[in-house]
Length: 187
Image (cartoon, rainbow, N blue to C red):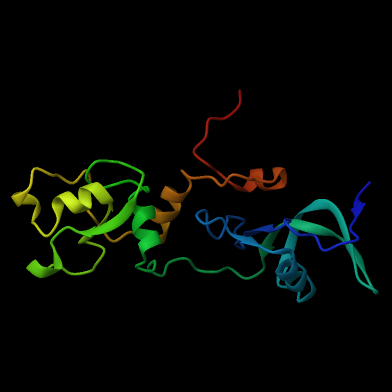
């Protein structure tokens, strides 16, 4: 029997799938709050794929709260990703490009700006504070430091593949058939 909610259903977002039934985004995971989901359902913009065991009511209707929805119109994902600090960290797997550390991340210009380096995908890497301070305003050949991987301009597919390595802390059971994390399968 479904639980009828007497208060707003906080904490019950819906997983949003593209029209091809793949998540719009893995990292961050494509989730909509319940209010946006209800609006999209009434505007007939989504199909309900799975539901929570909770019923929501209005004066004229009653239905189970969606937990997985699919967009009716396909959203193309081929535009280049935004050049942001978060996307640089995601591209680099949230680890320092010099030592592999995961803590105290900042970003570093491989070729310092004072030496003609630009703020671009090909010249910015995630770096921990100790490595960033150690490298300072020098070129790599002026230090004993080396890049673990060369910086590059990723596409959305590459960022999504990296994001799949970082599943969120909470995944509702109805989402599992649509998410493919790099975790060991049960045998």
